[in-house]
Every structure is written in C-alpha cells, then in structure tokens.
Length: 99
Image 1 (cartoon, rainbow, N blue to C red):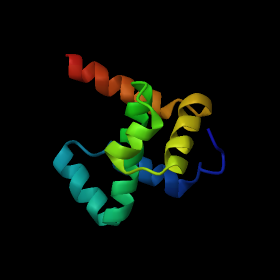
Image 2 (tube, helix red, strand yellow; image 1 turned 90 degrees about the horizontal axis):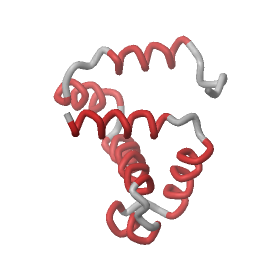
Image 3 (cartoon, rainbow, N blue to C red; image 1 turned 90 degrees about the vertical axis):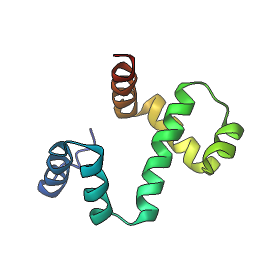
C-alpha cells in the first residue's frame, strides 16, 4: 500500500464507500462526490481491468471502451505489479455472479 495515500481524509472516504448498501446509494454518493467525467474514467478503468484479465487484446479494449493506450497500459501495470486491488474486486464480483 502506498503510505502517501494513508490519511485521515482517505480513510474517511473509504469508510463512506464501505457504508453504501446498494447500487442506488452508490449512484447518489458518487454523483455528489465526483463529476460525470471522473465517474466515467473510474468505471472505464475497471472495465479495462476486467477485459485484460480475460486476455482481450489492447486494440479490442480500445474499440470497446474508448480507453487510450496509456490508460490500458496503466491498468495493465496495476494488474501485474500493483497491490492486487483489481484482482480482489474482480474475483469477488465473479464469485458473486456465480452464486
């Protein structure tokens, strides 16, 4: 974990997110918190991560998501050398889908 991220404000944000109980609550909170552009950028990254995990090639990911090669590369680096955050949430989402 990046120690520069660990602040009282960041912890407040993460606790706020953990308190959300539904998709509707997420929409309401994130719409208040972020711009539409920020939400779309974040959601694009998780979509890219899912596709990279499924071994979809960069050019197809660009076509499907509109993500730049820089964004795809950044997400790919996080998947291979990051803190396993993408892997954690994608695995949990996949397991929930299979229930």
